[in-house]
Length: 198
Image (tube, rainbow, N blue to C red; front, top):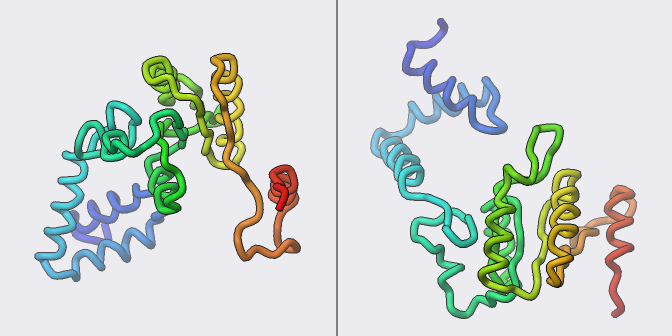
């Protein structure tokens, strides 16, 4: 063993984080060991508090410390429009735009047969129950534009359309400031499909 047991345990735990390999885990461990004790305790307390206090909103399944969450409780949010996203971080991304005034539903994943994730592993049943209770008029599918996100949107579209709802998909295409010659064919194709009159 190269390190004393407490350091090796810290490295092993840090290496479990997504995108953190053994070398990065070692660097993080030594960074944490060199920070002032008070800061290390604040970090530790913040992790424990978040883990203990954060739960799913009983309405939309976003992360919250109050149930229902602030978005579901907010009286000015349009309950007739529900945007379906894959993860809580997607709600944050959409909220940063300050454009969407409806409510959300978080699936907590996307359909991925390669990883053994099917609709039953997502919050689809809960979405159907919510639609029955709340009677929205539009469902906006805001899943990723990768294979899993597209499969999820296609599945949900086929499931929801017969219910008489308007089912829309967020547009996909060129990022602001992007050059055409550096853009892949699929993105260009989607940008062409989503063109609008000016």
